[in-house]
Length: 498
Image (tube, rainbow, N blue to C red; front, side):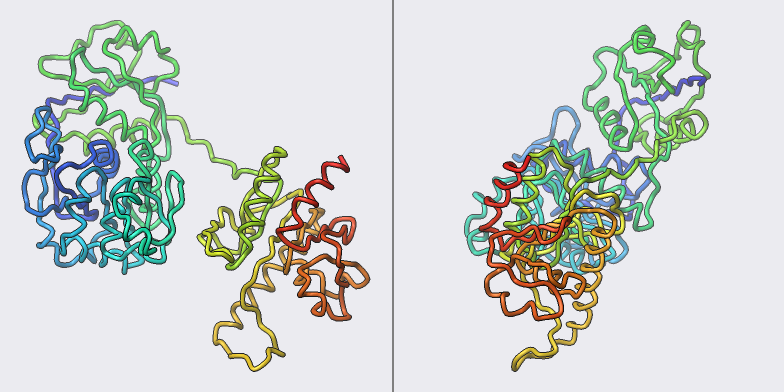
């Protein structure tokens, strides 16, 4: 494939902001990486971005409010009190650092956060200390989220009073229209996930082709500027290699390179260098003093469209064991069985009818990573038991909930999928009340099922029978287990039989 040279003229970056589609909340003391690593990929994609602070004007990197000698301060183009209508934005972004501590008690910041949280069409993203602003606004109530672990110690009363939703320790956590992340090293992942989510919701398209580009800057070139180009381009899927001379381009292997991005600090570019003869030359001129992303990314994208490497379609991962969840599933069984099978080298996935967060029987958050319709060829399916309202025509002196009919449809669909896996050759492991739900069906008449003791009168006469054993090999493809307390005995039995 013929390689190409992209020559980029750039003197200095100045943040050019417009009334726009994405709103950043920022105050002094912001974390440099968390701001720039979220701002720059979005800017590169062409989003118009507003930065709102307590006052319009300079937002200092240093928490003391003094100018940064390397010019890394940011310009807020609006004050938060002037952001009256948030409905036109696609997303709200709150970087961490000391900035959230200055923002969290600001009534305008809280008003803005609450407005975004209430609009399901908008995405709110916060990282590190950023969720403190959401916490102060009451927007974490009922949500599953993540952030820097220090937040618990910084806001102890709120934490103990449970006014913070449910915390989990993951790189990126998405719950509805909220995306959160833990600390600076997670920022590239959050930036990518946010860009993908905005694209899914009708925003700017990410590059569909990628390639390897050499970023060539002279020795002594400003490191922040170099990083400001490398990092977001990597977030957007490009492989970027930094060098300071054309000779090093050759060392990297010309055949593996789609192009060279070159910064020019003045003067003419040397076009007679022998290395340049190996590239077709395309010039992208950036007028002095203008931030270069609007010119750079389209040029890279055009190069990739003509000569870049088509991004390989990612095959969905395959799994050996699926644990099928429902609201109210027994999280102790879920986590125990996940740990057991993963320790055996099996690939385990938490599945359900729809992707998203569910609350376990004890309130622990469980996430459906892959919906059932995307799974196939499973070795085993675990139905972990648990308790949730089910439709019962003979409920004693019960209430009639309007939604119970929809719940019944979900229960039927869940059981139908489990039985379909059995028919396809998967082994079933039914725990607790799931052994009752499946075992009492007529197709299992004559088989015995272990379940919770209180279910012994609930099997009826049409289907399977209740067993007092802690676990039972109900059929050649079905294990039934009475509950969480019986798991150690069942696991020991598996090892003894190997």
